[in-house]
Image (cartoon, rainbow over all chains, first blue to last red; front, side, top):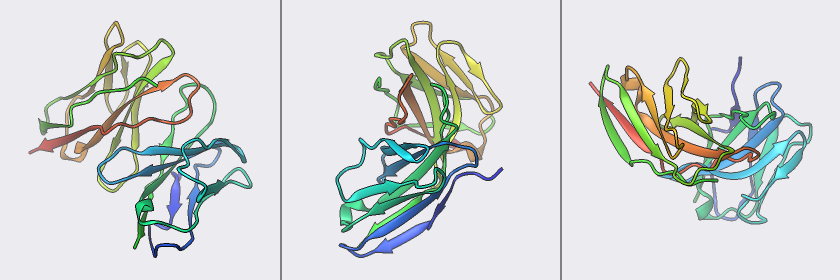
Length: 115
Length: 110
């Protein structure tokens, strides 16, 4: 079946602009995660959704970052007033959301470049 | 979650077994060991996970020491396509986020 998809694959924007990054999870997966990966580092957790609600947003770096999942499927990560330090690959993952060994499956990521 | 320590890089000859070590000396009883890999410009790919018993699937084997303070991921016959960064992650029973470290960059050479 289809895996996690993310759009766009690349996004270039200017400092101060607003961006939206989209994630389509695997069908049937109720849990959805956003991560951020800077060059040369491992992914860093941002936020976790169970269904429509954000169950854990402790990884969001500041209030310029916000994510929604209104119908419990597609999610959008929104970044306001972008800064050059926001440049990174933003990864989305999904899982069935059941049990302690629930495996997360990742999408290819969106590479965000803030000029 | 327990911190993990991995060597920054390793080489392996094509066709030979690749053994990737991971130390997690502060692991607790309800924490699982997960392995993911990330091929250049792709998202992380799940490989295998375990609690205390050794595990094997079509991709790899996971050997966990009896005291659970370390583990080894084994790719039995490495190919050039196995060149990637391999992440060892210790994940608590009820935690939803995966805490990635810097991983081990494995280079499989012909």
